[in-house]
Length: 288
Image (cartoon, rainbow, N blue to C red; front, side):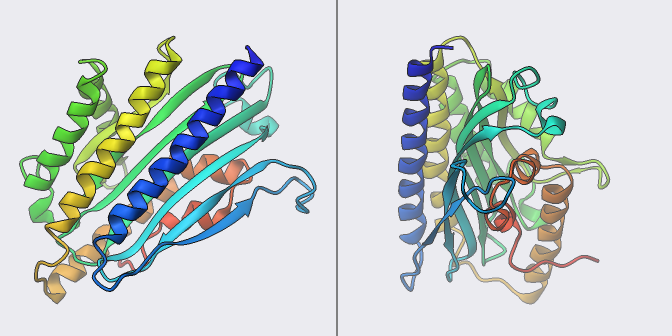
């Protein structure tokens, strides 16, 4: 690997994730009727001694607890170091050389109103002896009536991602949509987590600039479409039965994130910030 070139690429990616964070936070804050804003908190990744004596990177949490959004997290991170012996076998390019760098943005939004869908988005760049991008976005309606492929929210969400994909490769949307449907699936429930979106990993076409441009468009698509979906739902009337249904659906969300989510596992196994990693958990949930 050309170290100078890859250092430039890492910086470009890290700068982009920060810009995307700022843009999304501003869009979500604009929907808060009482002016609630994101609170930011920096963190540093700890070394094995736990004393912070070694620079292993870190990140910045951005948390919003408002009226429109009961809980929203928009986090960025840039971490590096050496994979544990156990984990390096699971990561491409790390088995022979365990050094790594990873930067990204992770988003989870839990609206207060059950009519408004929960949403998730993340994009990341990972470098070992190889380098690639991954991420995507998916929608999780809280009410069964909205959990259909022809519901307007899902139609619009998928249309935004199809447009982003089609700018780069006509094969991306059907391929990444299928990967999303397979990934965000709860085997023990025999059900999908939501109504899908796109999901991709280990994207390395051989053209880094093209892959980075696509990853940027994945982030832009989310910033453009999700706030618009939320805006038309957050003020709709709802009753206690709908809130109850929302709480149960959030329980399914917890089950997926703790049992199957790769990002959760990656963060926990690489010494990431536990508060940031588990901030995807809904503020209130219910199980039957």
